[in-house]
Length: 259
Image 1 (cartoon, rainbow, N blue to C red):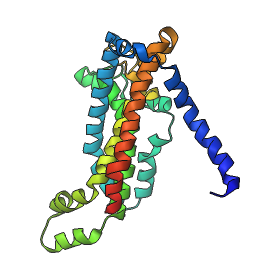
Image 2 (image 1 turned 135 degrees about the vertical axis):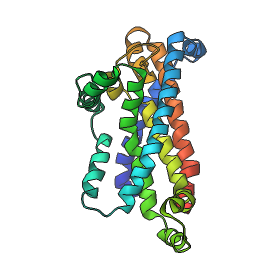
Image 3 (image 1 turned 120 degrees about the vertical axis):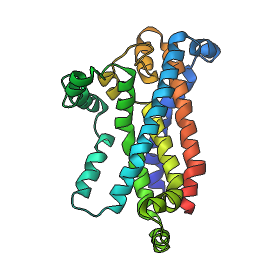
Image 4 (image 1 turned 90 degrees about the vertical axis):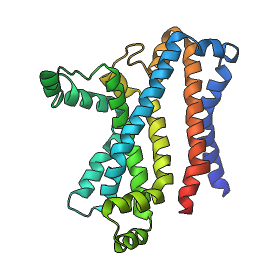
């Protein structure tokens, strides 16, 4: 490395790693099992794992077809659609939560009809947690899969079509196996993002223990009353994120590169 770059690079590394080191050094390792066994901590952990997994499943069902449309369609307006789909990547999460309230709240664009026709009120429920997490995490899956579809070998799809395979059969038997590593990588990113979501969740779903209080919300609240519990929950989230990144780097991303 050229020596003029060594200094800024070192500063960047220290800047990024110092907070993590502080978390590890200040962690109450001796009391960690006891802290993690507290009822409110276990409840937040169960809800976070459940909602993040369900949000990832919904993202897969909707995101893979959407990524295919963005990658394969050449119709006018696709660029605008791509920009709108990826907007939650840069949108402040709290703004996303407010937008969800304006759309799905009791007086929202769609929510008023859901409440009037079916008596269904989504805000401040577990369903609202899943919706908020899906809203912020779905673009991660779409961007990852679309990139894989754009770089995949379309000659195999054309060969399958020549042999009489229909569009859906070609997608299921040829296209999907080609981009499977990227689908899995996008799913891991989506799940990790959903697990760590805070702003949109607390705005749209609120904070009700056992129903909408996820781990990030529990961390924020515990900082005021029980800092050791906040650190313990933070360590769990940190461990999950490290495991997700290791899985991405060592398995699926390298597999995708081989394609």
